[in-house]
Image (tube, rainbow, N blue to C red; front, top):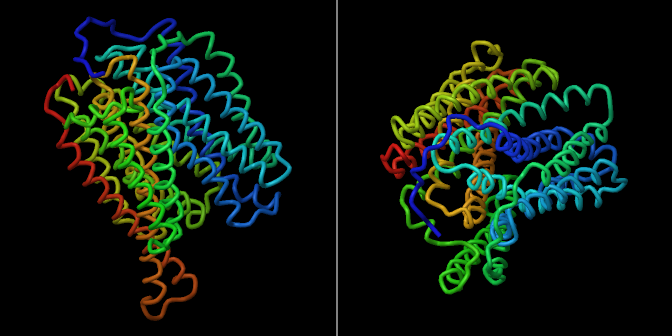
Amino acid sequence: MLTHPSTRTVPDGIRGKSLIALSVVVAFWALIMVDEMVISISLAGIGQALEMSQTQLSWVVNAYLLPYGGLLLLGGRAGDILGKRRVFVAGVAFYTAGCLVRAIAPDAWLVIAARGAQGVGAALATPCVLALIVSMFEEGPLRRRAISAYTVAGGAGAAVGLMLVGLLGTISSWRVVLLPSAVFGLILLVLGPMVIAETPRRPGRFDFAGALSATLGVVAIVYGLTTSQGGDWLNGWVIGSVVAGLVLLGLFVLISRRARQPLLDLGLFTDRSRVGAYLVLMITPGAQIGLFFYLSQYFQIVLGYSTLTTAFAFLAVSVGMTGAASLAVRLEPRIGGRMVVLIGAVLLLISNAWLLRMDIGDGYWTGVLPSLVLVGAGVAMAIIPAFSRATSGVESEDAGAASSVVSMVQNVGSSLALAVIVVIATAASTRATEHPPAGLSKAALDGYVFSQGMQATFLTGAGFAVAALLAALLIGRSRTS
């Protein structure tokens, strides 16, 4: 049920029990970001130790993404009906069990199964993270600060994950690198019930037909997009999966319109400002994913950085994000959420444009550092007001379902962005290989091909930033939005 923003006066800061509870729920989001960096960099070691094929390695990633994307709406609804803390703790338990099992798994299939359990856990807990923030803090300064902490935790988590792999990877095996996630999960599992207040349970029942169609629809789309990341958009499986997913989501809409207690209140999509916020959240990942993907290779292959040095190089993103997050919170009530999002989209555009001028061999300090600071600042400025607007005007008992939409659009947006970027970068690299400048040596040709793929990626990232800027225009002008 939608409602009007509260006008009750709130204190200036987050203190006491609220701060501790916020720290726990935000820490889980940070854990997810840390762990995804850890698993990405550990894939090579896992594959070599367990003699996994490339197909099996791809399923280490997909086994997580599919249940995570598919079960988000159900997880949000479960939190509303059963209690947000209860479902959050259950999700943390699933996720932690997966972290532990994969670290000690003797076989490839058990690693893949453990990643599936992680995906289920993340799908249950992630919507409850945002929903608990919405439930704990009324609309206004406190909620904006809490969302700011959530945003910064995600960026900092990715940087911490890189440093963790860099530190432990030099002295231990991949199994030791994977264990800290399980330990941290166990700590959160103990602290969660102690410091987070349970939300009222909402009388109701699950819309199983809606849940099935929504789950299968999102799974089909995510599967199609992840499969297309090999560059083959015309593959029958890709086309069939995406089309089937869209049909199933259309069926979900029809079911939701007729259900007495639908999985999702479709009234969320009647507000133009909220739809604009959803679009910003879905599009923004495309302005940064390619940047991280190619710069991590650039640092290690071209500049010769170690994994640990690469992690420290990316800390500039967290610095930019932390500084801009505080600024976004102060600016939003003064100039309006839409204007802050527009500023963030412009910063993301400048960040990608800056890298378009980079040549192979350019150093870190002048060639890359300014862009990393700008991308961190741009993400914070774009995401924080969009989060606020996407969850505004929502009753506490519906916060889980509303938050699950936020998580879902980000997940689908990230998969779509990565698929598009891989296709465009692959096409640019292939073209460079087939039509290189005359007289290049083998080393120079390799550098030229890498450079062309990288430049195509940054150009695509700039395009996503422009799209986010246009989506922001849908957000209302109100300074309280």
